[in-house]
Length: 257
Image (cartoon, rainbow, N blue to C red):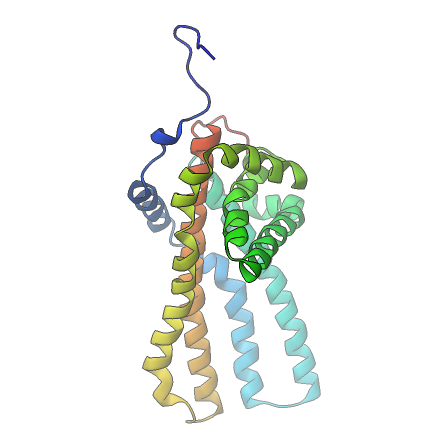
């Protein structure tokens, strides 16, 4: 198809995509500027459960166990709320600044669909990996922009998946090269902190109930903090790929319904 003189293409070409190095450097800088979002994202995962878990190691009783069970459920639900609120904030950060209140409000309105989208895409990826590996990796790549279409375009569940397919399928190879490194790096960011913490604090195990609980908590805290940082990193990488493919998120008028 011949373009009219002076016309500009709205579909970015593959060769215009930033290199892997440029992409990850840009994403890393964005995470470094917003590192404070990680404690916010992880707060309810640790503040409440920590008190409960340490107390459970010291005290006993059915009433206390019931209370800690309810508290753990509440803290988990609050964590889900904050987790997706922070990811929303990070997702719109290249367009404008968003407050925690706005992120929480968006999550209350559209969080269920976002969680369902995440479950379906990750379930498909894991099933594909378990069966023949390659289908799982293909599923991971082809659905990678669905979450961003859901946020930035206000797309519904099915529409977001279709939008991701339409954006990525014609440029599958170029996108795969840029997002597949996130898979082994995610595993490394989860496993390595656990191994390091175990080697550092392993000598304290067996010292007592409270000490054991404290060591386990520190290990999990380090691991999940690294997970939080990498979750934001992965999102920033995916966001930049989506912005390039769709042309969205580059102006302050972008809709983030």
